[in-house]
Length: 131
Image (cartoon, rainbow, N blue to C red):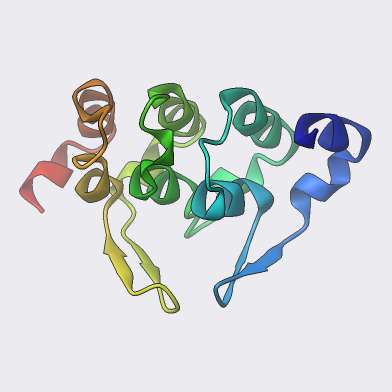
């Protein structure tokens, strides 16, 4: 249903939404608050419709994908974000309303798919191992 809605209303992929005191693009929000895994097809559609969600400074998309264990069975969600902007692997994310702080790799180590995704995060930011 979400995919159909976005295909009919692609401009909504670029509307900032208030989530826990922060303004987020729908991609960032769906990765943060969705209670079931964000389907890869939805993530890829949102990336195509609004690449700014991962290219703007302080994007939380990668951190959210790593923090929320909802992507445990789909490391491709994390990889698709990394491909769009590998620099996000080295950006520390801080949420004033959520009291979270750190690099995506700090959260990804807790994912069931960690063995699959950690090499990609390390390749994108080799210095993250020392932090």
